[in-house]
Image (cartoon, rainbow, N blue to C red):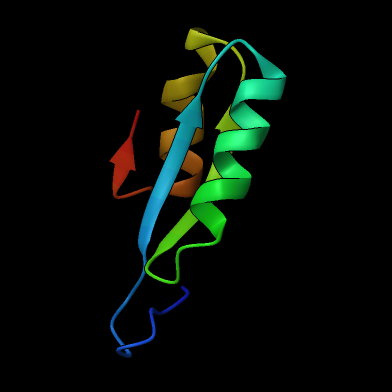
Length: 61
């Protein structure tokens, strides 16, 4: 688990979008934030449940 600059745990995110370019760009921008961590990315809705079970994000979306 990552931590933010205050020493607290980072918020783990899962990104789901069918546009790889949009998904990748959003992941890159979010990764710049010290209190956020993108733990998984999926390109199809039917992959979300398995990715959430595997990576246990705090915010699946």
